[in-house]
Image (tube, rainbow, N blue to C red; front, top):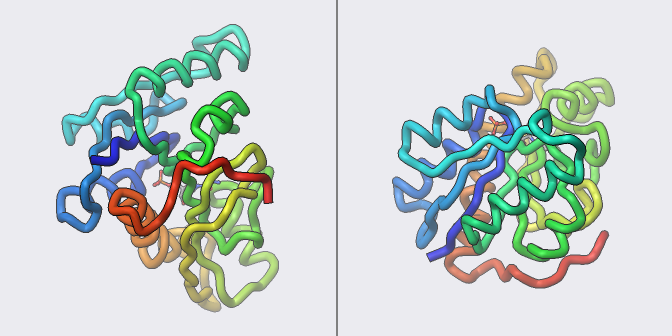
Length: 206
Ligand code: GAR
């Protein structure tokens, strides 16, 4: 059984896709041992509560500095002893202590086809605003292993999504979630849990 910790900051639709995937048997041999949020107002925490899954908020506002916050976050994750950490809309820079300790055991969902529209400053709606501003006709989502860089780790799965002429960032974001994110994130976890996707190896900055 693959034990996963899911780290979230917002609405938690990707968390929901994971919970549904486990319930429906699309994600096999997997158990969520912790949902952790940096944001006390994250609706993702409500989703975890409703499903009876262990959940906690570790807010940077409760700590003197980033170092203390990072240490507290890592301690809570260590306590849950996950095999895999899943960043599902987690908008916190992952500290190097965590990428070192969990090398090859952290995955992230990003709402574009990496290497387009990724890296520092590209998160959430901003990614879709940038895609529309550039006028791309195809976008999508990427699941990748997390290394010490931002969106630089090895790519696991990608799925393309068409941009429509009248798209707004919100409309495009929703289509990328429905057609790509909610499919490839559960698929990646299932692949890791069932052994078709190797994990746990040290990942190098790409
Ligand atoms: C998702 O679109 C996810 O890909 C994105 O934040 C959203 C979270 O939605 N993540 C990033 O931009 C990471 N760089 P959710 O809380 O409903 O899953």
